[in-house]
Image 1 (tube, one colour):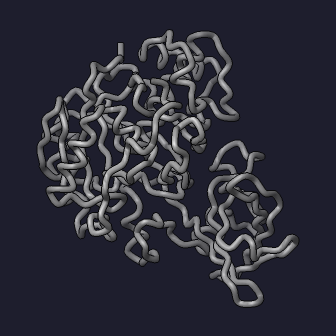
Image 2 (image 1 turned 180 degrees about the vertical axis):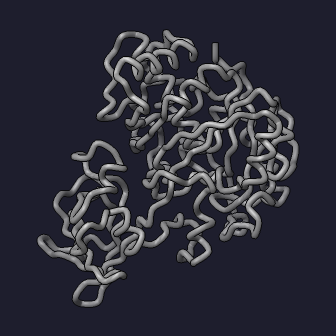
Length: 409
């Protein structure tokens, strides 16, 4: 079956609100860990995750950093309008370039109370330390708006503006406002590259102690960046996947990571974000291997590419093709966007293990889990629900091993 024909109603389960973790545990690595391998389910906690990963493995983390993407403007009449910054306008080469803009920037946003924002109206927000942020709608797209944001403090970057003016964008299903503790706890210890509007939540459980225990076992690590968009956690609204449009997300991978992926045959992705990045690399490399042009400046991997493109390259050949492309073009990193949809029917090329949280019903993230371990996703989620696991962003998680042989040679 082509994933276009999948009915999202087949990928649901009953998630009582009391199972959703509203706050993180006091200690990151105290979270429970469900381990799934070849149909067998075990329990442990994150502090001991190294015991469940073979020494000849490569663990890949997402080093994206969550930005203060929620901006709350007050109208002159007193009403509030929320501007949620999704991604930079199309005129910027990448997120980092847009983040470094001075004086003004254009950003694609969701707007709460958009009907109250009349054409030509400029909203203002007074921000510490002593500057004013102004916003004006300049374009309207399906589901979002392009907003011109400008500020009157010379030499200040948009990254600094967001830090002072915005709020931590906690997922709406937590049903609470961000608190001071979320400043630290809704970031991973790897957070470095600003650009996400949601945390790569599987990484929230990792501590220096856990990383050290992996190092001591001889387990290698690598970093990628996928800047998480709001669409990641959005439930699918259409009956079938044919009508669902995947959001595009920025990814960034350096040469050192490509070289490690070429030599390692047991790759564990920390989070679905790392998974989407790594599997997107295969399809980028497959295009290069076939002599096709890759649209790095736009969207390198489209939603249906894995299901409608001939996979001629092995994982090794695909990664070597990327390495050669980078060498020939004197690139230290590749930056592009991916719209990959990983759903049942997908054949995994790079990743053999996945560390992840428990996801919302009828979400593309749940489809990814079903693609990875098959129908056993129901057993895994049923076990978690019946054994006091905490769900969603601040909840517990699992280490899943792919049921089918990994194609990585």
